Length: 179
Image 1: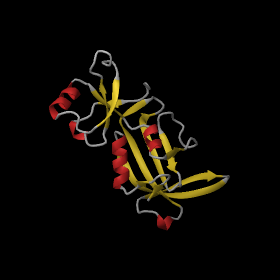
Image 2: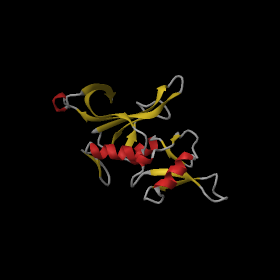
Image 3: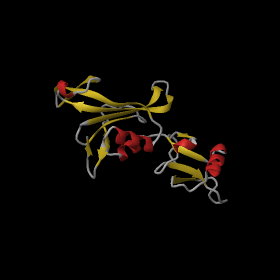
Image 4: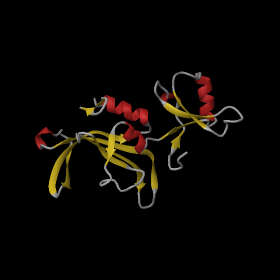
């Protein structure tokens, strides 16, 4: 198990179809093992409350691997920190930033990861009202793109990421993202 992954104890209201969580094994052989599960009503509300109260259930916070699993590509030129993620979708029409540090220098972690999703426009008139300019060099040319904020907020886990992408109408197809 990766020691850098941070976990939290979920609330009952977070459990819905597709919610991924880990539960501690219940047999003598598996009691020190965390078993990955996907919610499909396998516990009663009372059993779930008891498992939560006894810290027998946990959920990993959103990670770089979760974002890459949604077909975003990490941009190692922009992202210098090992636990943060900054990248683009395949077509460079979306940019995504995941930040888990309050202060990278002091290695202070945020309580809940912060996620920003931007639509990339090359023409200012196509950008949404709440855009910001993003300047960078590409093949020794200065490039300006306009980033329209689609989402900016705290996010706990992979299912929340999928829900937000769906709510802002970003659909994952077989090989590419579509806006």
